[in-house]
Amino acid sequence: MKQMQALPDEITQARIAVLGELERSLAKSQQAWFGGDVAGLEEATAEQVRLQRALTVLGRRSGGWGEGDQGAAGRVTLRQVEERVLHLGRVQAAILKRAQRANRALACLRRGSAAGYDCRGCATGPGDEPGKEGKSWRD
Image 1 (tube, helix red, strand yellow):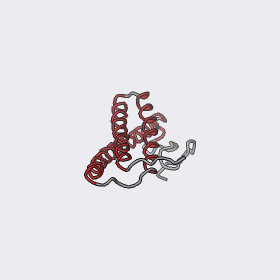
Image 2 (cartoon, one colour; image 1 turned 30 degrees about the vertical axis):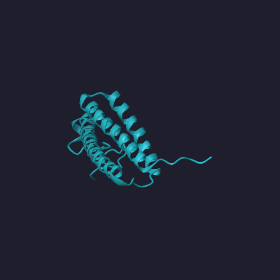
Image 3 (cartoon, helix red, strand yellow; image 1 turned 90 degrees about the vertical axis):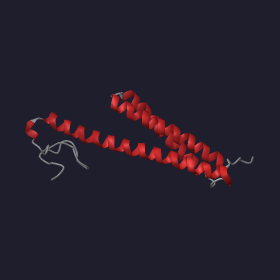
Image 4 (cartoon, one colour; image 1 turned 135 degrees about the horizontal axis):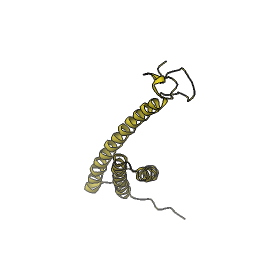
């Protein structure tokens, strides 16, 4: 049985639709983050994983761009949506990086004043392991 191939314009439209969903999901997760809605953040993250998989499948099915005005318009729209999603992804990465720093600072504060400013013994840096007493991530 011969498998039907989707036309490039159909794939472009499908990509635009999935990226639009991803854009909404990223905005939703940012709202959940700032609202302290952990369940909403988890839900949005799961949705983003699903959408990333859908984009991967669509990327494999790509057969090039459509011809004519519809293909050109699709490329422009796709690029615009891609840029918006990329921006939201960068914002999300920055938010998460800040949250990691804040969590490290809170972990050091919980250790008490004995930890000092360098938070010796805290697993605060790349490659640190909890329980390495007397060793700062900067050492």
